[in-house]
Length: 75
Image (tube, rainbow, N blue to C red):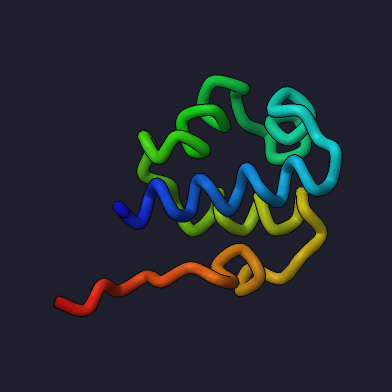
């Protein structure tokens, strides 16, 4: 699975675990709802600044956004 899709899945899991809608997360992160949807679907490349905004919105460390993700696929 593509790293964007894995990251998007993680964002969606965190959002749902906190009972947030995409609209609420978008508001907290200062983003458009459609962009949050795109992140969750793995359709968007995101910046480190947005990763920081998401971590603030979730009230977690940046590293926690990547917990459980395999970022490197070994051939």
